[in-house]
Length: 223
Image (tube, rainbow, N blue to C red; front, side, top):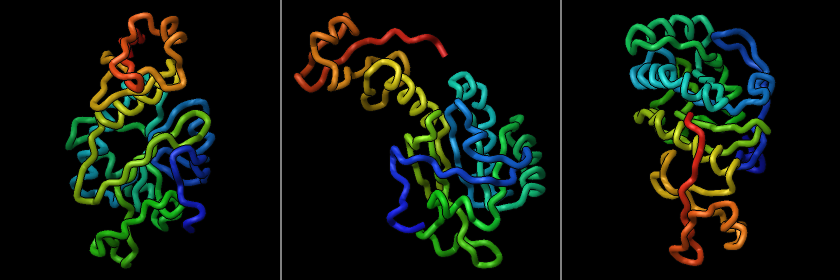
């Protein structure tokens, strides 16, 4: 994709039509009024990818509680995906139901700049570069809220993806930001746009550490 179209945080996630292991989709229609996590994989029937898909499948109920849809992508066809899903479930004890996009021609991978330019050996039998392990968190307005890119050698952390979803949704709802290593239940940071006077009403237990750092406990519903 050209540099002028590089995706950034806040960009609208490009729409596309694709075949998946669950049938054809139009991406924006698939997201609907939900959040979405789009995550790519280099290839079917590979070891790191297999562990990742199983882990995401096991956490799918937690994502669903947060109104988040999962969708994977790999540079193979749908029949390959379906056979691979059987392996994933067997190896990891999962029950994978979310769709995996078929992207043998790397159309979606190029659209989302998910091509591996770092590892020259990460190519298919035709010499075409595989996708890297990208993660996009997309909100209901179809805006990209997080972009992560991992090398092919490194598996992701599903708990971190879920943690970021919690942080984004908490911030959107309560006008707060979250500090290092935050998890639900920890204190949050009062957003700079909230004055101290307003904070007294919104966050009665807030405390001023520094003029630019104000912490408060936050009562949020259990996920």
